[in-house]
Image (spheres, rainbow, N blue to C red):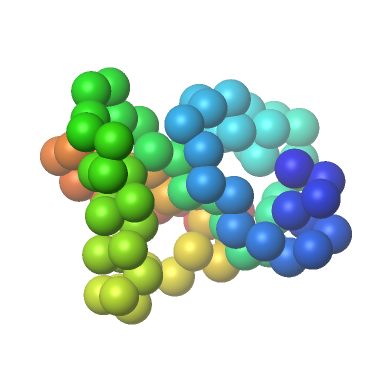
Length: 78
């Protein structure tokens, strides 16, 4: 998390603990965190989801926790 903040990088993760780090521990990566909340998936599915999100350009990941599920995407700004 510290490296992502210092280098202004977006974090892609399958780890649900990032919400706690952001909202309780006050870590605020400027470029955001994308949490892939996927239980069962094919090996290429996460990459395809991220690619589609970036190409659509409809989401702003800046200062946001973006939760990606099979049923949809939600964001919480911080």
